[in-house]
Image 1 (cartoon, rainbow, N blue to C red):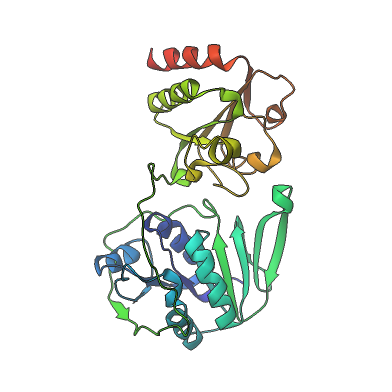
Image 2: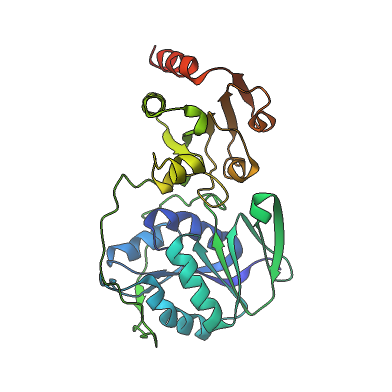
Length: 313
């Protein structure tokens, strides 16, 4: 199978739309994008390479993304088969994909790192807590895949690509999810998967003073700051969005520097897509040294200030 005649795409997060459309362009002759938001978002979808845009209107604050499943499934059912629906592996899109899977009687693969066409839609994703890569094939007429960050190289916007959006009438779900209240999440949100340089800290960072130094180093080299699971979930020193690992963020930066991270596989699967991996750890037998391009055995308390001085010098 060379390409599907049409691939449907949707993203609830604007920054994930370029790579989702890129996946659609790689696998389909046409790319049909569902858009929820302002009419200006229609032009954005076309600029990234969508060939058709289906406009679902502007979402009310009390509405959930999953409420659009019936509207989307009706449009998909009316289209050509076989077909593929691509979404980013965000929380809301995974919930939406699950509902679409039931309504369309379609196979679903989550967190795909690679997608190809081979007697159906074939996708690779991590299994056994990141210890292995599984390959699965969907043979149903409609296939659903949620993409891990970095599965496709994002499309670059071309404003010369334009088109009109087709408005779809909202099909109300039988059982709508009602949003009772929204609260602003504390801390700064970050899309770590988009960062070109990442410094990640682990339990070996020792204390909050050293965490502040790691942030200073990140600023010096224009990097984002990430962390291992204990820093986010046990110590709660950093936001959950900055946790790198099998159940956190999957990265593909140019440079990944691990400070005080032991290198358990559950963490490393989130970083192995990096072009260059560096690590600092005082334990010369730390597992992370099996994965790095450059490693330094040393005390964080001495290495961090020296690195900052070198970068600022």
